[in-house]
Length: 381
Image 1 (cartoon, helix red, strand yellow):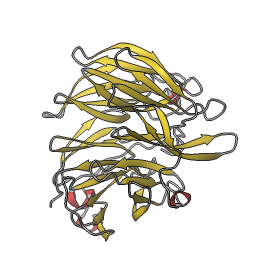
Image 2 (cartoon, rainbow, N blue to C red):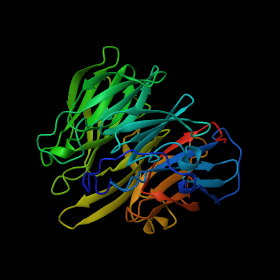
Image 3 (cartoon, helix red, strand yellow):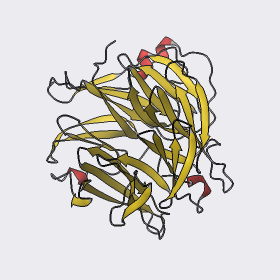
């Protein structure tokens, strides 16, 4: 969402009759590069859509053909009312199913990963992110309405069965929980407290997944958001700060002791993705003093815990990117994908860079392109 927790028009979606055939918007296809064979068939990109606009959309890139398919959900699911809904906040694959978390429409959309066709819709209020473990999906939820409220309630994590698509249990955590990671049989949850500004939460909740109970809170930094588990049992945590005098920082938690072992104050962090031992980080750090974002990029070596470079886009294209909003690294080729949300209300742009940071191609996306997941199964009709 724009500028982290800026809350715009709050909309309650009214679900009515199915769309007429002439109202269905067909996908558009753009040839952006030559096709290439490989174990990764393609990737899905979830466009958030501006809050209140009911414009979350789903795109797909086919590596075999080199074609980008924009807005595939509507034509593949003509009977689904309101299409994907309001604010697509996360997308992941588990087994043969594709899961899209639709924040302000309060549900998780479940699709067949091979066709992107609707299978189920699971209602979870103000849902945020999703992870999986031993046949269950775990979804973070702000629990209450979408609004700034100094008395906002504690959030929770919902446990969802991936066969029956039912929520079997919930576990209360901190205020406004966001991204999660699983390490062993423990689930770690970043608590932001964003609705309670300026009294942000500053903890990571630890849940025992066998008992599905919170067993600990780790004090980290204020307004936490992203988590990334490296290959050494450490969790990298992003803190957005308060947008005034407390800057964004990156912290490291050791999962063996569940303690913060390092703080990187000179590594502002809006989003990150791990590839091997390389952690790709970008920051769009907002300041209420200047009413501007400060954009930075970096690659951190997670083994040495040191910044290797402050520039992973090396050909000057970064100067064209107004608001970096999503990032992913191809698991085989190591190509870098970066999205640009631009002004948050018009179509964005997806850039593909080679591992050495030079642009290979770009393509127009939906509004606020944000979340990418790679698939090894080719999308079919």
